[in-house]
Length: 347
Image: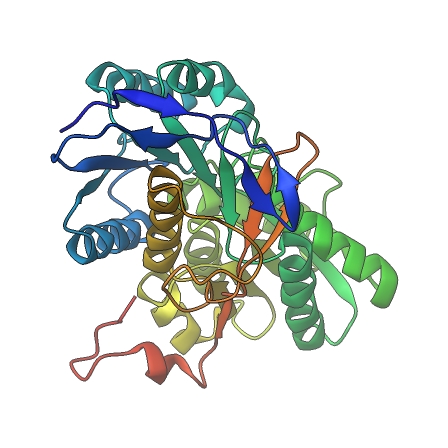
Protein backbone atom coordinates (compact mmCIF):
# COMPACT_ATOMS: atom_id res chain seq x y z
CA UNK A 1 0.00 0.00 0.00
CA UNK A 2 1.25 3.48 -0.78
CA UNK A 3 0.35 7.02 0.14
CA UNK A 4 -0.06 9.94 -2.20
CA UNK A 5 2.59 12.50 -1.41
CA UNK A 6 0.97 15.20 -3.49
CA UNK A 7 -2.31 15.34 -5.32
CA UNK A 8 -2.63 17.90 -8.12
CA UNK A 9 -6.02 18.90 -9.44
CA UNK A 10 -6.24 18.25 -13.15
CA UNK A 11 -8.68 19.02 -15.90
CA UNK A 12 -10.69 16.19 -17.47
CA UNK A 13 -11.12 16.32 -21.20
CA UNK A 14 -14.85 15.98 -21.93
CA UNK A 15 -15.27 17.01 -25.56
CA UNK A 16 -13.93 20.42 -24.46
CA UNK A 17 -12.47 20.87 -21.01
CA UNK A 18 -14.55 20.22 -17.92
CA UNK A 19 -13.54 20.11 -14.30
CA UNK A 20 -14.53 17.02 -12.35
CA UNK A 21 -14.78 16.97 -8.56
CA UNK A 22 -11.87 15.34 -6.88
CA UNK A 23 -9.79 14.85 -10.02
CA UNK A 24 -6.12 14.50 -9.35
CA UNK A 25 -2.80 13.16 -10.53
CA UNK A 26 -0.43 11.32 -8.27
CA UNK A 27 2.96 13.05 -8.16
CA UNK A 28 6.31 12.38 -6.49
CA UNK A 29 5.30 8.74 -6.18
CA UNK A 30 7.28 5.93 -4.61
CA UNK A 31 7.86 2.59 -6.27
CA UNK A 32 5.07 0.89 -4.33
CA UNK A 33 1.73 0.10 -5.96
CA UNK A 34 -1.28 2.28 -6.54
CA UNK A 35 -4.22 1.08 -4.47
CA UNK A 36 -7.60 1.09 -6.25
CA UNK A 37 -10.59 -0.34 -4.35
CA UNK A 38 -14.10 -1.16 -5.56
CA UNK A 39 -16.86 -0.90 -2.93
CA UNK A 40 -19.91 -2.85 -4.12
CA UNK A 41 -23.52 -2.76 -2.95
CA UNK A 42 -23.26 -6.10 -1.18
CA UNK A 43 -21.24 -9.29 -1.29
CA UNK A 44 -22.44 -12.84 -1.87
CA UNK A 45 -24.49 -12.35 -5.05
CA UNK A 46 -23.58 -13.38 -8.59
CA UNK A 47 -23.48 -9.83 -9.94
CA UNK A 48 -20.76 -8.72 -7.55
CA UNK A 49 -18.95 -12.04 -7.78
CA UNK A 50 -18.50 -11.02 -11.42
CA UNK A 51 -17.26 -7.50 -10.58
CA UNK A 52 -14.60 -9.09 -8.39
CA UNK A 53 -13.43 -11.09 -11.41
CA UNK A 54 -13.08 -7.82 -13.34
CA UNK A 55 -11.10 -6.11 -10.60
CA UNK A 56 -8.80 -9.12 -10.30
CA UNK A 57 -8.34 -9.13 -14.08
CA UNK A 58 -7.43 -5.45 -13.96
CA UNK A 59 -4.92 -6.02 -11.19
CA UNK A 60 -3.32 -8.88 -13.14
CA UNK A 61 -2.99 -6.66 -16.22
CA UNK A 62 -1.43 -3.77 -14.25
CA UNK A 63 1.51 -4.91 -12.11
CA UNK A 64 1.85 -1.43 -10.62
CA UNK A 65 -1.64 -1.61 -9.08
CA UNK A 66 -3.11 -3.34 -6.06
CA UNK A 67 -6.79 -3.46 -7.07
CA UNK A 68 -9.42 -5.35 -5.09
CA UNK A 69 -13.09 -5.41 -4.07
CA UNK A 70 -14.81 -4.99 -0.71
CA UNK A 71 -18.46 -4.92 0.31
CA UNK A 72 -20.91 -5.50 3.12
CA UNK A 73 -23.27 -8.46 3.51
CA UNK A 74 -26.34 -6.20 3.22
CA UNK A 75 -27.28 -3.55 0.65
CA UNK A 76 -27.11 -0.73 3.16
CA UNK A 77 -25.82 2.84 2.63
CA UNK A 78 -24.51 3.02 6.18
CA UNK A 79 -22.37 -0.06 5.59
CA UNK A 80 -20.88 1.47 2.45
CA UNK A 81 -20.09 4.68 4.32
CA UNK A 82 -18.31 2.71 7.04
CA UNK A 83 -16.24 0.83 4.46
CA UNK A 84 -15.29 4.06 2.67
CA UNK A 85 -14.25 5.65 5.97
CA UNK A 86 -11.97 2.67 6.58
CA UNK A 87 -10.41 3.10 3.13
CA UNK A 88 -9.87 6.81 3.77
CA UNK A 89 -8.05 5.96 6.99
CA UNK A 90 -5.98 3.45 5.07
CA UNK A 91 -4.94 6.10 2.55
CA UNK A 92 -5.82 4.32 -0.68
CA UNK A 93 -5.40 6.14 -4.01
CA UNK A 94 -8.84 5.69 -5.55
CA UNK A 95 -12.23 4.51 -4.31
CA UNK A 96 -14.77 3.14 -6.77
CA UNK A 97 -18.36 2.68 -5.58
CA UNK A 98 -21.53 1.03 -6.83
CA UNK A 99 -23.80 3.09 -4.56
CA UNK A 100 -26.87 1.93 -2.69
CA UNK A 101 -27.80 5.58 -2.14
CA UNK A 102 -25.73 8.10 -4.14
CA UNK A 103 -26.81 11.16 -2.18
CA UNK A 104 -26.02 9.54 1.17
CA UNK A 105 -22.43 9.03 0.02
CA UNK A 106 -21.71 12.66 -0.86
CA UNK A 107 -20.25 13.69 2.55
CA UNK A 108 -17.93 10.69 2.80
CA UNK A 109 -16.85 11.06 -0.84
CA UNK A 110 -15.98 14.70 -0.09
CA UNK A 111 -14.01 13.50 2.91
CA UNK A 112 -12.09 11.16 0.62
CA UNK A 113 -11.42 13.93 -1.90
CA UNK A 114 -10.23 16.24 0.89
CA UNK A 115 -7.78 13.50 1.86
CA UNK A 116 -6.41 13.42 -1.70
CA UNK A 117 -8.25 10.25 -2.74
CA UNK A 118 -9.94 10.07 -6.13
CA UNK A 119 -13.55 8.87 -6.19
CA UNK A 120 -15.58 7.19 -8.95
CA UNK A 121 -18.97 5.53 -9.24
CA UNK A 122 -20.71 3.01 -11.45
CA UNK A 123 -24.53 2.89 -11.81
CA UNK A 124 -24.97 6.39 -10.42
CA UNK A 125 -25.26 8.83 -13.29
CA UNK A 126 -26.64 11.56 -11.00
CA UNK A 127 -23.75 11.28 -8.52
CA UNK A 128 -22.03 14.31 -7.01
CA UNK A 129 -18.52 14.57 -5.57
CA UNK A 130 -16.79 12.11 -7.90
CA UNK A 131 -14.30 12.44 -10.72
CA UNK A 132 -16.34 10.26 -13.08
CA UNK A 133 -19.33 7.98 -13.11
CA UNK A 134 -19.30 5.06 -15.55
CA UNK A 135 -22.45 3.68 -17.19
CA UNK A 136 -22.60 0.62 -19.43
CA UNK A 137 -25.01 2.46 -21.74
CA UNK A 138 -27.53 5.28 -21.90
CA UNK A 139 -30.06 4.32 -19.23
CA UNK A 140 -33.10 5.73 -21.03
CA UNK A 141 -32.27 3.78 -24.19
CA UNK A 142 -31.80 0.59 -22.18
CA UNK A 143 -35.19 0.96 -20.50
CA UNK A 144 -36.90 1.64 -23.81
CA UNK A 145 -35.21 -1.41 -25.34
CA UNK A 146 -36.44 -3.70 -22.56
CA UNK A 147 -39.96 -2.28 -22.89
CA UNK A 148 -40.01 -3.04 -26.62
CA UNK A 149 -39.18 -6.70 -25.95
CA UNK A 150 -41.72 -7.07 -23.15
CA UNK A 151 -44.45 -5.24 -25.07
CA UNK A 152 -44.09 -7.56 -28.05
CA UNK A 153 -44.49 -10.64 -25.86
CA UNK A 154 -47.58 -9.07 -24.24
CA UNK A 155 -49.17 -8.50 -27.63
CA UNK A 156 -48.83 -4.74 -27.03
CA UNK A 157 -51.60 -4.62 -24.43
CA UNK A 158 -52.25 -5.52 -20.82
CA UNK A 159 -51.02 -4.91 -17.32
CA UNK A 160 -47.40 -4.96 -16.18
CA UNK A 161 -45.51 -3.86 -13.08
CA UNK A 162 -42.03 -2.34 -12.74
CA UNK A 163 -39.82 -3.32 -9.81
CA UNK A 164 -36.70 -1.52 -8.54
CA UNK A 165 -34.10 -2.73 -6.09
CA UNK A 166 -34.33 0.46 -4.05
CA UNK A 167 -36.47 3.52 -4.60
CA UNK A 168 -33.27 5.57 -4.20
CA UNK A 169 -31.39 3.70 -6.94
CA UNK A 170 -30.84 6.19 -9.79
CA UNK A 171 -30.14 3.71 -12.57
CA UNK A 172 -33.05 1.43 -11.69
CA UNK A 173 -35.42 4.37 -11.75
CA UNK A 174 -33.93 5.73 -14.96
CA UNK A 175 -34.54 2.37 -16.64
CA UNK A 176 -38.14 2.43 -15.45
CA UNK A 177 -38.48 6.03 -16.62
CA UNK A 178 -37.37 4.87 -20.06
CA UNK A 179 -39.79 1.94 -19.97
CA UNK A 180 -42.67 4.18 -18.95
CA UNK A 181 -41.84 6.78 -21.60
CA UNK A 182 -41.64 4.14 -24.32
CA UNK A 183 -44.96 2.65 -23.27
CA UNK A 184 -46.61 6.08 -23.24
CA UNK A 185 -45.26 6.92 -26.68
CA UNK A 186 -45.67 3.58 -28.48
CA UNK A 187 -47.94 1.25 -26.52
CA UNK A 188 -51.09 3.05 -25.33
CA UNK A 189 -52.78 -0.23 -24.35
CA UNK A 190 -50.11 -1.05 -21.77
CA UNK A 191 -50.57 0.15 -18.21
CA UNK A 192 -49.02 -0.54 -14.81
CA UNK A 193 -50.75 -2.49 -12.07
CA UNK A 194 -49.67 0.07 -9.45
CA UNK A 195 -48.79 3.71 -9.82
CA UNK A 196 -45.78 3.26 -7.54
CA UNK A 197 -42.74 1.14 -8.32
CA UNK A 198 -42.39 -2.00 -6.26
CA UNK A 199 -39.21 -2.06 -4.17
CA UNK A 200 -37.67 -5.48 -3.50
CA UNK A 201 -34.51 -4.19 -1.76
CA UNK A 202 -32.25 -6.41 -3.89
CA UNK A 203 -33.80 -9.41 -2.12
CA UNK A 204 -35.07 -12.37 -4.16
CA UNK A 205 -37.37 -13.63 -1.42
CA UNK A 206 -38.99 -10.21 -1.12
CA UNK A 207 -39.42 -10.03 -4.92
CA UNK A 208 -41.16 -13.43 -4.78
CA UNK A 209 -43.46 -12.33 -1.95
CA UNK A 210 -44.38 -9.04 -3.57
CA UNK A 211 -45.13 -10.76 -6.87
CA UNK A 212 -47.51 -13.10 -5.06
CA UNK A 213 -49.18 -10.04 -3.52
CA UNK A 214 -49.61 -8.56 -6.99
CA UNK A 215 -51.28 -11.74 -8.22
CA UNK A 216 -53.85 -11.37 -5.44
CA UNK A 217 -54.62 -7.71 -6.08
CA UNK A 218 -54.17 -7.84 -9.88
CA UNK A 219 -55.13 -11.28 -11.22
CA UNK A 220 -54.91 -9.92 -14.76
CA UNK A 221 -51.21 -9.06 -14.43
CA UNK A 222 -49.27 -10.19 -17.51
CA UNK A 223 -45.65 -9.17 -16.87
CA UNK A 224 -43.16 -8.10 -14.23
CA UNK A 225 -40.20 -5.97 -15.27
CA UNK A 226 -37.26 -6.11 -12.89
CA UNK A 227 -34.36 -3.73 -12.42
CA UNK A 228 -32.44 -5.52 -9.65
CA UNK A 229 -30.88 -8.97 -10.02
CA UNK A 230 -33.36 -10.18 -7.42
CA UNK A 231 -36.56 -9.44 -9.34
CA UNK A 232 -36.57 -11.86 -12.27
CA UNK A 233 -35.82 -15.00 -10.21
CA UNK A 234 -38.17 -13.92 -7.42
CA UNK A 235 -41.05 -13.12 -9.78
CA UNK A 236 -40.40 -16.20 -11.93
CA UNK A 237 -40.53 -18.45 -8.86
CA UNK A 238 -43.94 -16.99 -8.02
CA UNK A 239 -45.10 -17.51 -11.61
CA UNK A 240 -44.02 -21.16 -11.52
CA UNK A 241 -45.62 -21.74 -8.12
CA UNK A 242 -48.97 -20.40 -9.30
CA UNK A 243 -48.91 -22.32 -12.57
CA UNK A 244 -48.96 -19.13 -14.63
CA UNK A 245 -46.26 -19.92 -17.19
CA UNK A 246 -47.45 -18.68 -20.57
CA UNK A 247 -49.91 -16.27 -18.96
CA UNK A 248 -47.44 -14.17 -16.95
CA UNK A 249 -43.71 -13.69 -17.52
CA UNK A 250 -40.75 -12.00 -15.88
CA UNK A 251 -38.41 -9.68 -17.75
CA UNK A 252 -35.57 -7.40 -16.75
CA UNK A 253 -31.99 -7.07 -15.69
CA UNK A 254 -30.47 -10.34 -14.53
CA UNK A 255 -27.67 -12.83 -15.26
CA UNK A 256 -27.95 -16.28 -16.89
CA UNK A 257 -26.60 -17.97 -13.77
CA UNK A 258 -29.48 -16.51 -11.77
CA UNK A 259 -32.34 -16.63 -14.29
CA UNK A 260 -31.25 -19.25 -16.86
CA UNK A 261 -33.38 -22.06 -15.46
CA UNK A 262 -36.41 -19.75 -15.46
CA UNK A 263 -35.77 -18.91 -19.12
CA UNK A 264 -35.81 -22.64 -19.81
CA UNK A 265 -39.10 -23.10 -17.94
CA UNK A 266 -40.73 -20.11 -19.60
CA UNK A 267 -41.42 -18.26 -16.35
CA UNK A 268 -38.92 -15.66 -17.54
CA UNK A 269 -38.86 -14.62 -21.18
CA UNK A 270 -35.91 -12.27 -21.59
CA UNK A 271 -33.08 -10.99 -19.44
CA UNK A 272 -30.79 -8.07 -20.09
CA UNK A 273 -27.49 -7.12 -18.57
CA UNK A 274 -24.02 -5.83 -19.05
CA UNK A 275 -21.05 -7.92 -18.03
CA UNK A 276 -20.28 -6.75 -14.47
CA UNK A 277 -16.64 -7.83 -14.72
CA UNK A 278 -16.13 -5.56 -17.72
CA UNK A 279 -17.77 -2.60 -15.98
CA UNK A 280 -15.53 -3.06 -12.95
CA UNK A 281 -12.44 -3.26 -15.17
CA UNK A 282 -13.49 -0.13 -17.09
CA UNK A 283 -14.12 1.87 -13.91
CA UNK A 284 -10.74 0.85 -12.53
CA UNK A 285 -9.15 1.88 -15.83
CA UNK A 286 -10.65 5.36 -15.48
CA UNK A 287 -9.10 5.66 -12.03
CA UNK A 288 -5.76 4.39 -13.29
CA UNK A 289 -5.73 6.84 -16.19
CA UNK A 290 -6.40 9.76 -13.85
CA UNK A 291 -3.73 8.66 -11.42
CA UNK A 292 -1.30 8.44 -14.34
CA UNK A 293 -2.33 11.81 -15.75
CA UNK A 294 -3.67 10.31 -18.98
CA UNK A 295 -6.42 12.18 -20.89
CA UNK A 296 -9.97 10.83 -20.72
CA UNK A 297 -12.14 11.95 -23.64
CA UNK A 298 -14.69 10.79 -26.19
CA UNK A 299 -13.48 7.80 -28.18
CA UNK A 300 -11.06 6.47 -25.54
CA UNK A 301 -10.76 2.68 -25.28
CA UNK A 302 -11.04 1.38 -21.71
CA UNK A 303 -9.82 -2.06 -22.72
CA UNK A 304 -12.92 -4.28 -22.44
CA UNK A 305 -15.85 -5.07 -24.77
CA UNK A 306 -18.57 -2.44 -24.82
CA UNK A 307 -16.19 0.29 -23.62
CA UNK A 308 -13.92 0.50 -26.65
CA UNK A 309 -15.22 3.88 -27.80
CA UNK A 310 -16.70 5.77 -24.89
CA UNK A 311 -18.79 8.92 -24.96
CA UNK A 312 -18.86 11.45 -22.13
CA UNK A 313 -21.64 13.80 -21.01
CA UNK A 314 -21.76 15.94 -17.89
CA UNK A 315 -24.62 15.29 -15.49
CA UNK A 316 -26.66 17.98 -13.76
CA UNK A 317 -23.90 18.44 -11.18
CA UNK A 318 -21.18 18.91 -13.77
CA UNK A 319 -19.73 15.44 -13.15
CA UNK A 320 -18.64 13.70 -16.38
CA UNK A 321 -20.52 10.47 -17.01
CA UNK A 322 -18.79 7.92 -19.23
CA UNK A 323 -21.10 5.80 -21.41
CA UNK A 324 -20.32 2.50 -23.10
CA UNK A 325 -22.44 0.43 -25.49
CA UNK A 326 -22.46 -2.76 -23.47
CA UNK A 327 -25.95 -4.26 -23.04
CA UNK A 328 -26.65 -7.93 -23.80
CA UNK A 329 -30.01 -9.69 -24.40
CA UNK A 330 -30.50 -13.35 -23.47
CA UNK A 331 -33.59 -15.51 -24.00
CA UNK A 332 -34.30 -19.22 -24.29
CA UNK A 333 -33.06 -19.28 -27.87
CA UNK A 334 -29.55 -17.91 -27.24
CA UNK A 335 -29.08 -19.13 -23.67
CA UNK A 336 -26.75 -21.80 -25.06
CA UNK A 337 -24.26 -19.07 -25.90
CA UNK A 338 -23.98 -18.38 -22.16
CA UNK A 339 -23.86 -22.04 -21.12
CA UNK A 340 -20.72 -24.14 -20.60
CA UNK A 341 -20.34 -27.72 -21.87
CA UNK A 342 -21.11 -29.08 -18.38
CA UNK A 343 -24.41 -27.18 -18.24
CA UNK A 344 -23.20 -24.44 -15.92
CA UNK A 345 -23.55 -20.83 -16.90
CA UNK A 346 -20.66 -18.63 -18.02
CA UNK A 347 -21.98 -15.63 -16.10
